[in-house]
Image 1 (cartoon, rainbow, N blue to C red):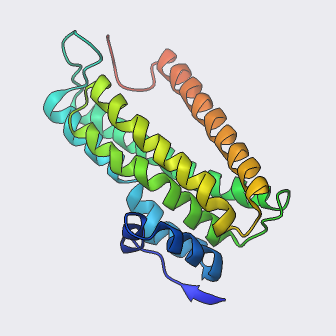
Image 2 (cartoon, helix red, strand yellow):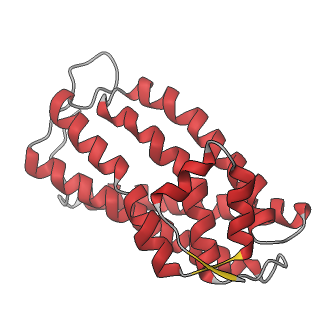
Length: 205
């Protein structure tokens, strides 16, 4: 098993040779910190940066009403929170994936799980370029196919990358998706509670 390096250039193979990318995850010796600092950290930076730039210039538009503008300080707070939430998602999903691997016959080093989650999340990170024009419907139309691509990569690539059979891989991928859905709903709930107690930007819609 050879030692492997992970960088943003590695992700370019998603567009040309995705199968070889998952093969490399399976065959390589991946360091979790190297994958996190070489790829995950930078991929997660794209959505909050695009959101900050777009909201600064155009405001958020949720329909036919006037766009919602926040102060620079509030936008910075929201963007930092967005970034931290995404990093938590990367780290927690990778740890949960490693924990699930024993159940589904795919026991692997944590670095391989970091690499898999980073690759599967990349289409959503790239789709966040839609945040440059933060109109709700436009973002929805961009993110739906990106989400489909990410799910395809997860369901198709997990059995290859973690060296398990197709049936076990599908069950494990479904369990990961369920965890991410629960985490997302929990995050929304925490956000509502914080806003209820006056912690967060002052938003009137």
